[in-house]
Image (cartoon, rainbow, N blue to C red; front, side, top):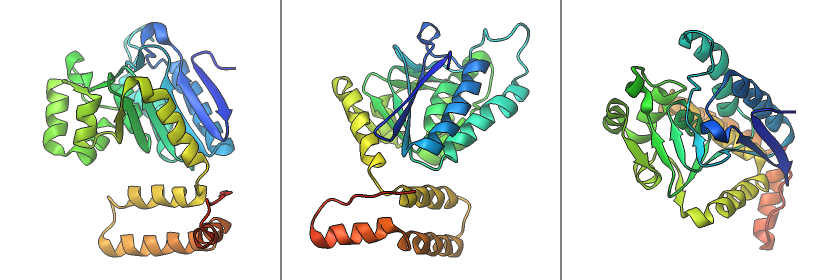
Length: 255
């Protein structure tokens, strides 16, 4: 069904694997189209989505050879990248980027679009844009200052330095850096944990945290109350309370 990615769902965990290892999973037009379709599909049929890469890299960024002539970068970003990035950030289920190897340029920022980024120790993140005379795109200028502060974001982009996964975790760019030998088992366990959790509450978490950057305190408190009211009316809340009182694990059903 797909030519440039693989897609599978098991135990309510959808996994999208960028599958162009011969070019370090560079982002072609076809890959972006297939990824968009797969992300939307996952949001409708799974409880958590994982995005990862095949081979020795997560994603090397834009496939610079994917055009017969000069790239119209503004069109490509608006028509092909933006829909994918919005599908990931607006996905109704939790999203995880499982990063191995290099995540460079748009590939790094594709990873950062997920709710949670888990990387192995040998992974790295490179804002490689200035190396070819470009500015950060694919959401990089939005995510980086919010995650690591303006000073670090500016240096990372201007110098295009390779940032190790350990440094990225220490800076707050990603959530976890784990030993290579534990990486696959770790992100799979994390994904399964979310898949067994309260999906509707997770959706509210995503809404609340992302809205906080644009809200003042009164607006955020009102949003919290609204979301909490909706969650408090769910079967998941009733099950969570019952499990707490009965000293057992909750069995959430979600949406």
